[in-house]
Length: 207
Image (cartoon, rainbow, N blue to C red):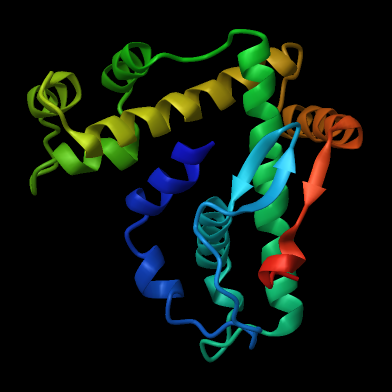
């Protein structure tokens, strides 16, 4: 879950420039550490860092709704709730994946990335003539030398593959995306209803 929010912000390079300067509603300033706990879901913490990163992603996705670079109280509350629901859902999915041993290892993720390179990755190895340099991509992914960016990218896609595989396992008989989505929503609502959730957002100025 931590990789998801962190690496998504790295891959979407326009997030910081598009959203960071948007003015959020005036809040009482309090000093909090990035590692402070904003919430707990089945004993898994949501840190302030995690929440801020997810909120940034949400605001980037809804940037068209932010007029004159100002966020109304109503919009801010909506963005906060979307970010919270996303993190809660991610944790519950992660726990289900771990419980069933459906994890995707980094080596497996690397094989799947090379077999079917996603656009976000292949564009970094495509020249001005549109040629994909698979040899360079292979070197980047398989190079044994330490590379924190590579490790984060692989971990991000491993998590993405886990989620995709999870949805297929959750709805093996679904024939459409809409059907698969509804099955997931029903499953998530059931899990949220029985989960141990400690919501501390208001203590951090999130409302």
